[in-house]
Image (cartoon, rainbow, N blue to C red; front, side):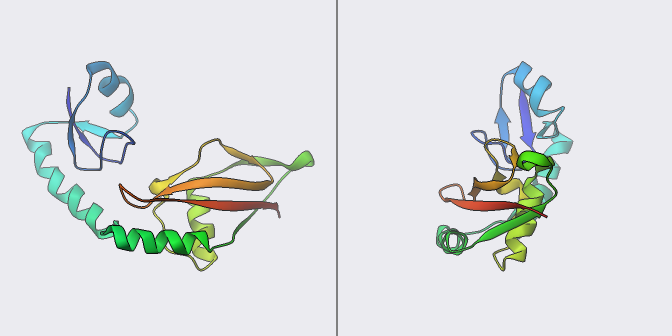
Length: 148
């Protein structure tokens, strides 16, 4: 099945890439979740607009990505949220919450789709989160979740 990615999918590609995947994977996972659209000649025209939007918010060079990674390593990110007894959060911390906390800590402006949370953050404490800055560069930040 030939698809056009609309979001970055680890191991497959970037938005705007045309990929070939098995029918079931495309039909049951990628398309329903909005990660891809079916390839057609008309959809091929959308690739230019997807790539133009991607280049506007993308970290262009590996050197710039390394600079941003160094900024993230030196950053102390604290996130205040409501918690119940025993330090369990009401809900979970999302990638958008982390991107906002990084921005509030005078860090770089991160795209929430680049933040990868391994296990859902549902407790108070320090959690390690990965950020894909470039295809060759990723950075890890420690997010300290405290009770508000």
